Length: 176
Ligand SMILES: Cc1cc2nc3c(=O)[nH]c(=O)nc-3n(C[C@H](O)[C@H](O)[C@H](O)COP(=O)(O)O)c2cc1C
Image (cartoon, rainbow, N blue to C red; front, side, top):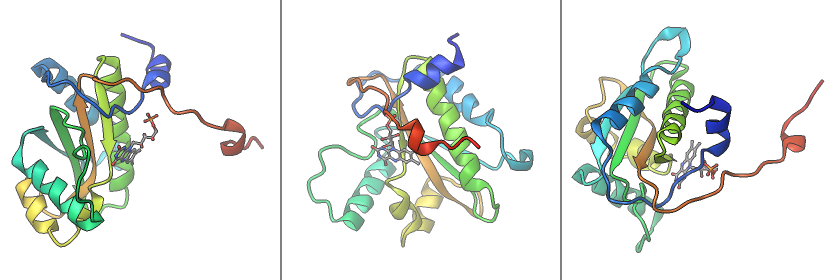
């Protein structure tokens, strides 16, 4: 197992995957990384909908996203043809749902990096998920009652490599 600091430093977004599927062990490890994330008041309100990349509902989401964004010829679908996509939903009435989903999705992203897998956190389907087809998509993805989309994440084997992003600590950090 790697040092968590090394994994944090190494992780980056993957926008290109091979067709190799995840093993059951890999998928289980990723799901449990999400489930092990802390949640406010230990509410554990995050729901995880696991889909294979060829699930037709993903194509419908892609179509709706493109319709709303007036994209006619996308170069990739929103999950870059990854073999696995997990959609996180949460209780729409709980104040900390979005933050808890963010923590859970980063746990999963770091777990993927640890396993040598690529991953991409996905926010671009927000309007499609929460727009006029919200009820349809929520039901198709089997969200629990009163749950709504928070974030998604794609997983697979890396077909492309990307360096982690750089940052300006001086601009973003204040020491008092
Ligand atoms: C909340 C959130 C939503 C994101 N949504 C998308 C997305 O829809 N599509 C995409 O390609 N990348 C998405 N990203 C990935 C960011 O673009 C990426 O993390 C950022 O550019 C930094 O690059 P790195 O992850 O390689 O370090 C998202 C990241 C976060 C945290």
